[in-house]
Amino acid sequence: MKSISLQIPATSANLGPGFDCMAVALDLWSEVEFRLTGTSMGVAITGEGADSLPGDQSNLIARAFLRVYAQCGQHPPPGVEITCTNRVPIGSGLGSSAAAVLAGLVGANALLGSPLSEGEIFALGTQIEGHPDNLVPAYLGGLTLVSQAGREVIARKIEIPPMQAAVVVPKISLLTEETRRALPLQVALTEAVQNIGNAALVVEALRTGDVDLLAQVCGDNLHQPYRLPLIPGAQAALEAAQNLGAAAVLSGGGPGVIAFVDDRPEEAAAVMADEFEKAGLESRTFLTDTTNQGAADTII
Image 1: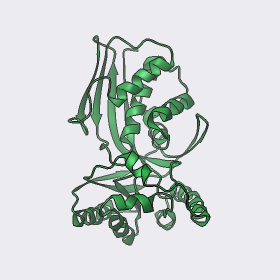
Image 2: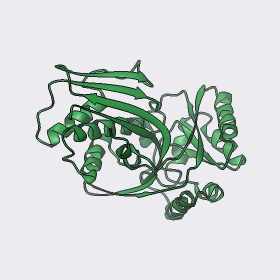
Image 3: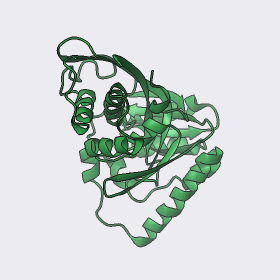
């Protein structure tokens, strides 16, 4: 093969109590094309990150691409043109780095004739990304549950009905490393038990499309209480959406927040954006749905 194209969806991880072990794919897509041509590697980017992401081998997509060739004991091609149309905002809590890693892995694997299995892609991607919770739903779509046994990533996809969601991303720089440093090393047993129960019910709520149940059980004790204070207006934004009946949580490690609704997602988006404005932050809104399609379904 001389070229490959694919789409990679945005993802929202944790979903409240499912810290580092569950996420959903969203109907918001970036597109990447790989062409074996020329004598060097270049990355051309339009859309999100066009002014800030590198256009050479230091780009995360390029690094993941080359990692596959190294893993398979193959020399990389002499020239590769990578063209990206990015729609997933960078540093938003919507899995942009996982999408970049996955694009490089899947593109290289396809060009090599698919020597890596799904499980090997997950394991290699986790080594690069650090955790698999965004990577897996970006590849499989739907709601995904993940765990790790050593380097092996154990993953299952659950198809869910389309659910409307409003995402509001405040304009604030928040590194994943910073949000993880804020987390405690220990929590009370009662709080851990509550999270386990909530996480199990979140799966059932998403599986059945029950927003009312989701709103009841998306509370969290492990990460949100420690991350929300890092984002001015975020706690108030979640409460404003919850007052409308939405199931509202931090998206991944933030700073974006996501609210699942039965209808009128624009109303949830408006009240969340208003709270960020009160806190002195500009924000952007994305109205989307969950999707059962992932990158593995889009390879051309």
